[in-house]
Image (tube, rainbow, N blue to C red; front, side, top):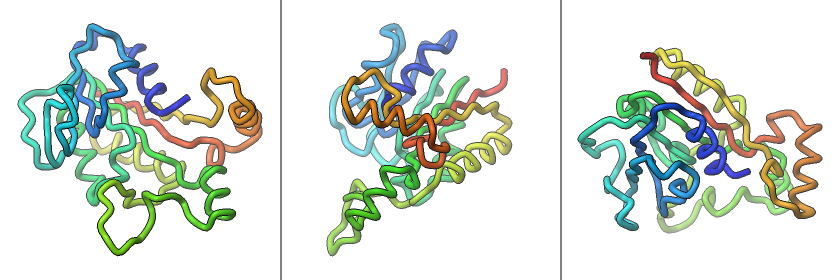
Length: 202
């Protein structure tokens, strides 16, 4: 299961949701995983398509309303100020906020670093600027602690969900091995993403 699929599953389980803001939406893939009645608005650095209603740096965009659900799927790790960005996300959410962050200490990432000597292109240090890069290398524990601290600070309720390799419906050798490995691995190794589901009190 991907982080987008997990987010869609969580949204489908929510009551009385009619508007959604997807921050860092890119191609708007989340639209394929949410109910049709939800009014979807995307926010991104670039006007990739009609689904992007808010264009520019998220921290400087002046939003004209609040939304029943706000999502930020693998967005905060790209920002220099993820703490401030989270605080702004909270101000835009009427009822729910769903945030996903990558666990860089999972088994696959450790294997890539040990065998290939690198974590991937989004972490490379080059002689020219990389726009789509990760600024932070975070563990599942650090992400969970970040979520808990922010929930307490803003008075939000919190549920933490781990997204494991091989947890989807795909049938392949890799998926089967992923499911098998994740049954015996601790969350620090088996979760490739950590999703925080925050609820604003009524």
